[in-house]
Length: 261
Image (tube, rainbow, N blue to C red):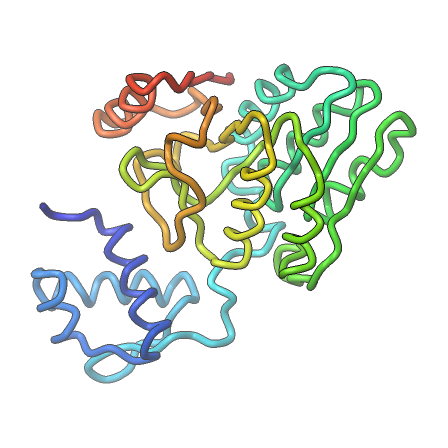
């Protein structure tokens, strides 16, 4: 079965992480597509700053962290993220212990919960901690670890160790892509591992993704559908038939899909 250009490009990056250089001819054979198709993929990846094209192939752009900065992510699809955040905030009750990940969507959620009472907010997102720091009624637990400068997040074994001792009522988790077969997937392993740890210690897991991420697959699996309680997305864009079918597959498994607007 043919895969989407997005998934193919993600797999190209995965191959580059393994060997740092790949030839166009090899990729053409690997994906069973024309060399012209591969060249278009490489052009797009170079535009995104993820690779450097060379004669006959490409290498990984080691100056790229394989993700956009937090500010770049924050302004992308901002209206959609705000719609998701408003709906997500409705699920937060006074006294809850909640987890917010390092995503820009989680940052938008933090802006919507300032009026809640006596929350405990567990996060590895420095921007979320800063956003809520003036809320005297909230307790903010900023997980300690290695600072990822580009996303202003904290990662590593110390973060996961802290999470193993904290019981969370509701985790609000975003990521780069969501599909039924591949589940929730992320662009980086270290960020993905923190999300996995949050999910493991949470009673309820709410996936917060804008509609552009639906029916897409990224590099690292964070969780599959069996670990999700709700999916919160938006209706600010027209979904493709494939995206509609994707959401219906989740519904068929008893996962509620909540729409923000």
